[in-house]
Structure formats: C-alpha cells, structure tokens
Length: 137
Image 1 (cartoon, rainbow, N blue to C red):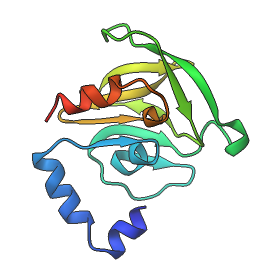
Image 2: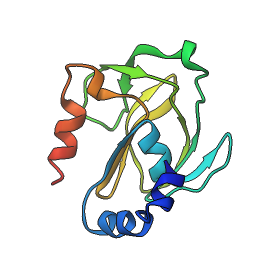
Image 3: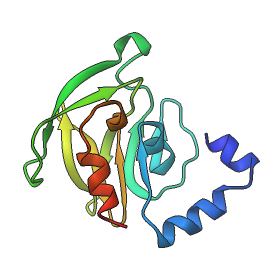
C-alpha cells in the first residue's frame, strides 16, 4: 500500500489531510498509520505512536473470529472481531488510548483524531467501531 501511495504521489496529500481530519485504518490501515512497522520493516505514515508487527497472528489459515475485551479504561462491551492475517500492536505511546485487547495485545486504539483496529469491524453487523469514528467528524 505504501508503494502505491508513493507511486501515485499520495503520501504528502494524505499526511496533510491527516493533520486536519480524522483517519481510521483497519488491519492494513493500522500498518500504514503506525509509527513503526516490523516483520518486515517498512515505511509508514507515522500518524499514530504505535509499533506493529505485520501478519503477527500467522498466515491466512490462522485468520479467525474472536471475542475482544474492552480495555479497563474504555466504556465498551465485549465484541466479535474478525482477524484476517492481522498485525499485532506491539507497543503504544503514552498518548495512545487503548480501547480493546485480544490476548493482552491492543487491537483497537486511538490517538488524537486518528483511530485504528487490527481487525475488520466491517465484516460484522456491529457498528460501534464505525460509530465511534463518525462521532469524531
């Protein structure tokens, strides 16, 4: 995705957009918006102070539907999450708010105006992730 954004000369316009407007990224979007990416290392936009590991849960066969747990500080009920070759958020900066976790790892975070999930909320009927993002606009 980063190669395509660079090839089409969209990196700077996307960064400028993110300075003014909220951006939400799911799964690969979390990789694009992260500060640091590993497995393998790659460039990213650095819009959220998170470090992610690509495809950290395993290959396509390891994709799953699981229940995620809200973080202690989040007023969110447990929800179903679809993980497809998902990244894992390995670390978060001090200004990153963790909204939900899976197996102790953050899977839904926000920082400032931006938000990411490492799962695909669009593949379930639950609209809470999208509602929270829309409430930012």
